[in-house]
Image 1 (cartoon, rainbow, N blue to C red):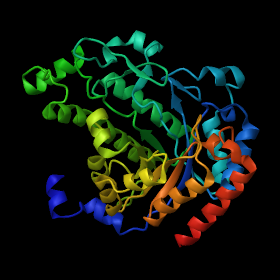
Image 2 (image 1 turned 120 degrees about the vertical axis):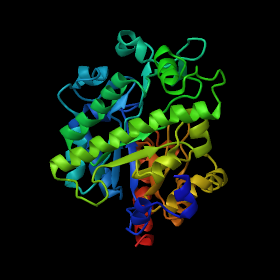
Image 3 (image 1 turned 90 degrees about the vertical axis):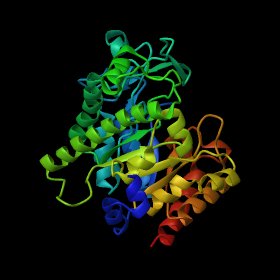
Image 4 (image 1 turned 135 degrees about the vertical axis):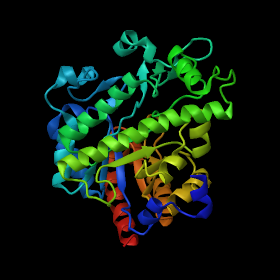
Length: 384
């Protein structure tokens, strides 16, 4: 990869850059906090509203807090869905509704390799859990204690790939999305399984310093290996279903939504620059949740993001539409969207209820819905 960076774009990236790439206008959808996933008629209305407002791509959350939004061989169903309507299958309902309106659906595996510390799989398979040097495992996130499953462990890999391929096959979706939780937290990796694997390969114990660059590289390679295996399995599913074509880009995309590159690598061992160049990722959504327009504009200049656009792959910017007490007004959102699209990026909003739903803010849902529709019409005209 380093040689390719010196002499120019890799062959795959060069071919990709010669092909016009779609500029997506998308939105993340989730059950938290929202009742969308529990009512089929509401799902249909939401998809219709989004289609009329110029959205092209939906990223519905399918894996969160150790549970799925369908019956799975690998994990329990989300409790509220199991109680409200266990036969609904909201991801397939969203997919079929969106497909009728010409929209893409790329399910979002929000929690990646992360599980609640209280999850049954953590109790049943403690050898799958990554540890710090002191033997601790917990990471405080989202108001609870989480742990990370080991991406180098064969059992973890099989389960992770199973969770993804079952939703791809059942709902015939257009791809899958991973985010900043598809990661290996840099302080973790001192569990017995990882130590044994490292000793077998390197002949020594892992360095005591968890930021040792060679130790970081080795763990990053385990994460990359899992992503490569996912790429292979999706390509095989494409071929078996007739969706894949020899010599053409993959039909089902792998979308990745990381944070800024330096933070993503130093904190989570996510080398998304390498993954993009290596064609393990087809659609890159870089989160930019800076509240001010000035801060947002500054974050558009990060070098890895500029280079990713040069590689010819679709690059979208994740923009905060509204969540909790943070709902930017439409003037601010318009400025951010214009800044992103002027550079050729698509935009993906976090999240659906922040557009014109429960987090619409003082402007109100009706006003924001009309404003988003007008904004996206302008974006689509300017992109022609």
